[in-house]
Image 1 (tube, one colour):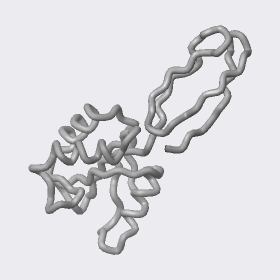
Image 2 (image 1 turned 45 degrees about the vertical axis):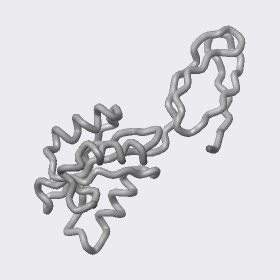
Image 3 (image 1 turned 180 degrees about the horizontal axis):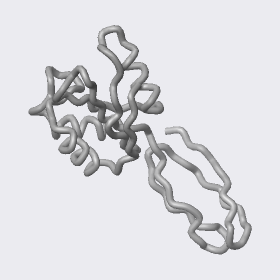
Image 4 (image 1 turned 120 degrees about the vertical axis):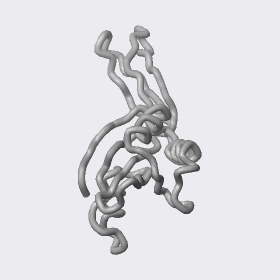
Length: 143
C-alpha cells in the first residue's frame, strides 16, 4: 500500500502534526502538542455504484471503480453496444471497493443476469442493501 504524508496545523495551539495516510484505513488524528482532535477520516479506495438504464427496465448495474464514477459511467455509456446513457442512482464511497462489490453481488446472487454485473432487483431494495454495506454519496445524473 502507498502511504502519503501530510501536515495538519492545529487551530487550538498552532502546532503541526504529521500524519501518514494509508489507503483503505480509518483514522482519528490528535494534535501532537495539545491532544485536541484534529480530524477523523477514511482513506477511500474507490466507489461502488448503482446504475440504471432507460432502455433496460428492471435491470440495475452494480459495479465498482477506483476512478471518479462519472468517468466510468461516461465510458460505459459511450460503448457502441449500449443504446444510450446510463443513469447514476447511487454512489457509495469505499475503503475496499472490490471487496464491497463482491459482497453486494453475493447478496444479489439469485437476481444476477448471467454472470454479469446486472441484476433484476428493485432500485429501492438495491440502494438499501448497498447503503447497509457502505454509507452513500448519492447522486443522480445522466451520462
